[in-house]
Length: 222
Image (tube, rainbow, N blue to C red; front, side, top):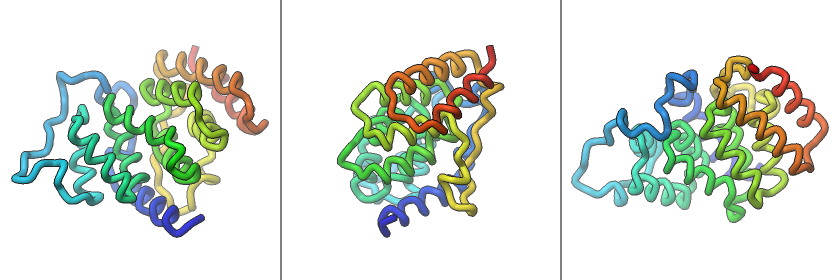
């Protein structure tokens, strides 16, 4: 693992461990990604435009607390990615969960200009904790339908259907655990079944992952 990737993963794991929003609420308790009526107020205006503000973990976390995410905040997160915050922004975008946030997250995962290993780390940090949420399952389906690298696609499918927490992260990691599949809401269960079929049709998956997909299907509520 390169020094840059190691530092990025360490920062992302620290943020995931420290941020209370990284502990997913049951799907019914999380703000609907498409609900703007109960939007979280944006941070108070400052003298300088958001787009010109210095970037840090704290400033990104404050911006990501506002739902739905604004176009201006998306622009800041794009700049943060260019400045080496890829893993941190991925965690915060998944936590935010609003349409613009997930659109940028999808774009980040599909970007072949970013090393596959970095995208795989980000997928495991973000998709796994939120995998029973319908918008995240829809995002995964769109990615699998596109031109995703095989290794990245495998990590994405693993994050949805496998429980490889101990294989993916160091023992000290405290990434939030997703709710169990047997309690998934009907829409999440429907999307998970469709995604399982899509993953099998795409092919090029290891036998152990195919077994994990079958176990998840068996656990899904009818």
